[in-house]
Length: 170
Image 1 (spheres, helix red, strand yellow):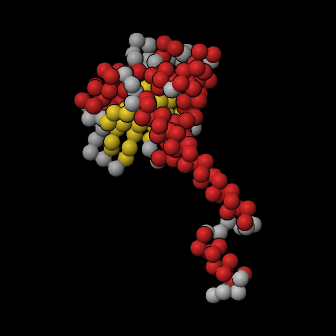
Image 2 (tube, one colour):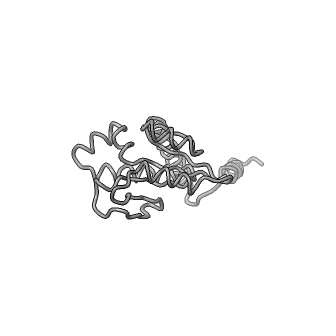
Image 3 (cartoon, one colour):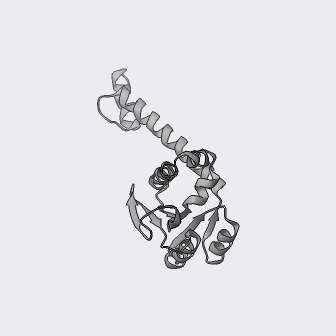
């Protein structure tokens, strides 16, 4: 089963405290941080992620980019992110694909759920993202400790065998 996450970009930026604060100073940087976070989420979870932004906040309306191997979509003029998300749910939802919609907009959650998508609030996505970041950090620490003990990358099993040999055991 394939999972796709559709993210209402400005809704998430307006909900996550760190992005909300950044938005007041630099909206473009807040967007970039969200896109970077969602790229990490996609890489870790193995889900396809699409981040949708309302076009009225940026130039280049109606454009779609592929940043960090995820889709970043800016709606067309006079099209809201909610409308584009609803359209995408209809296009993407099928028997082999689960579509998740991340937004705290209750009307959008209801419309997405009514179309067969799964709801994910901005808060839920933030908690998941924190867990993803912790898991990535843990994996990096583990990989770094393995690399420090050997000049070659070895699996734990092989490293244990070599350690036994080094100690004279079998």
